[in-house]
Length: 405
Image 1 (cartoon, rainbow, N blue to C red):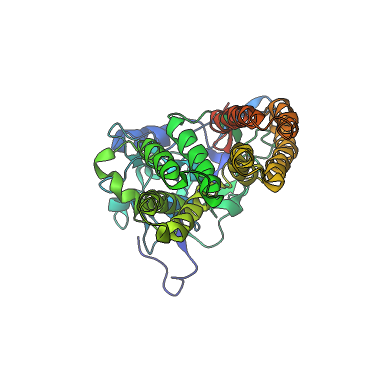
Image 2: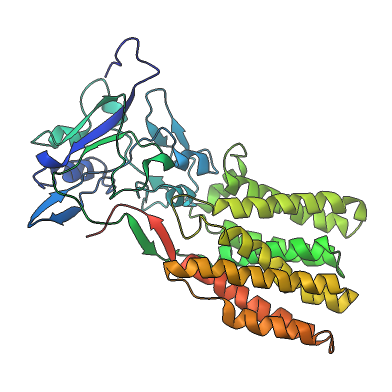
């Protein structure tokens, strides 16, 4: 399909959909499945004033493809026509692109790699995509779009990805929400690494006993669990390739470098500043991985607060036991109070309140002034609180997607 002359910068390929022309025949979905078998296009139906309407949607080949930026393995690319494609031979099956997409457009194949609509790229210039070609009423069309308008109330805010999609809504209002809830599968490694790296950062920052060995062990063991989250382990080393835009690439690279640097630090403390810097970058990257606009339960202040709070609430009582520094004890108390306040904001989404264990933790800290060994009890309570909160973080995910009916 030739692009109009003189409009190369303004126009990109995209879909248009008119609710008022759709007859809910499902031909678009069937044509796509017959050609590729990937369930890449869906047709959810909605009840409106005694009748039904449907939305035909797949990948929107966005102007701001957050999936491409998130992919650590450089498996996603975008060509000059705006077509966003996945190279299955490079994909490691980590699923991070799927987290980033607010339209649920990416799906795992049976091989464990990601797949999605590619606009029938081999047919461009010869014919229309199969889904468009099969639509009997012209409800679903395809071509060069100058001003896409996919900002409708029943889809994620368009400014997240700037989708190449133009929708003509029905005359009646569709009263459904794009917000959905699910649990993140295979999250044990993610829980373990995020908690361990945060504890290791504060433990090494305060240079507590055997900090280099403790940090090395925590990072080495849990980083391996975290990387195992990828489904295609034979090329899992590709996870570090996208240092330019992927926070996951940065987390894994600098987490690995920090682990090695702490092992070397056990032999010579000259490497301590480097090890601490690498770990700081890894933890900062870890926080940013989850600051996804597509997932409102993660994209809020509680994420950085709870991630940093883990290190300080768990390690501060230990630091007091070793050093008797009141400042370190106060630091743990301060973060515990901040965590309580922060979690109250998430309670509006149905998340559990953190007050119970944190309000046990605070008196234990105070009693540690009289009986220092009660600091150990404080560490245990803090660790239990952080594990419960982090587990819920992955088990109750509020995200943008295609509305369910």
